[in-house]
Image (cartoon, rainbow, N blue to C red; front, side, top):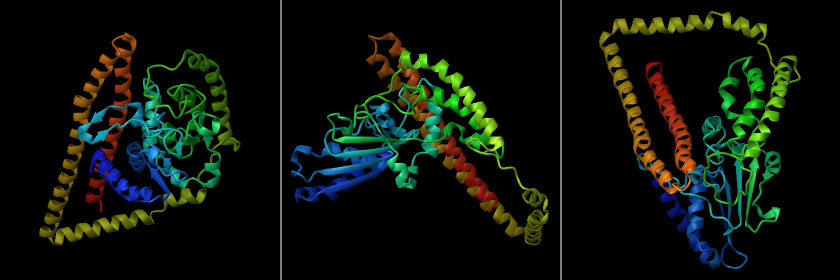
Length: 387
């Protein structure tokens, strides 16, 4: 189902499950991750906290929350709808209503999206993080959870809030994951670039020292145009020190003292690459298939026709989501841009700049979605042609 349809059904199911327990005076604990964090957030909007039995409120624990008040992509672009994709940017999880604990992983683009999306490096890092960081929370160890950083706007920091917000730092930039995948030299090169690149990416959140917005986590915060002048003034010094750190890490990786010491391939592994046995087996298998096809042309023709039909079906399956993505980009997003322009006519810089910043972020997200669609199609076709 489209996300908005699925979420709507999920809210109904959750409400029907917990309402009788709350009416009977029973305590309820709700855990939500990713989409179910959205469902739980919308359920919080429906419940009346004043009607909760004394001492027996509903409590919520949310992870990878797309509706994080300060960072969730559904709040950054609140009010946007993409009907062709079944996406409704619902806004922020309610604060101050119920005891709530929210955990977020740094650079998870769904739950920790850039506050200033005119920074394309930040957008791209967040979109890659949607694929590589989102969903990792369930694999965290108790030690990692205990090291989570309590964010401003949380009750334990003295704010008038029932909600606590925690950020769990991510070691490496998702943006550099493709580079790190290159054998031997990938990690050293990534370690060379990462210090400076981290500051540039973090500038999209405001303070270049942090990969998240450092303003109050319990305050609904839509995207903006530029970080403060103070944030920009920090950059020259940080980039200078980052360059030194990157060079040190690069050299250290090869000398064994860096964050990712290089392990050169052993002689035995190189020898195995030259071993012809696996290649011989593949050639033998191919010759056997060719012999079978030659002896039974009808069977070969049938297999070819089936493969061609399946390939065409897979390719056609790509056209449908591609058309939906194009529809969103050509209709819904321009309408959103127009509303941003009209809402900010009193401030010409924002009236012009905010639609451009939104398009950079949303275009990057839709581009990432299209690449995933194409990748899945190529994988399906490869499976059909090379079973």
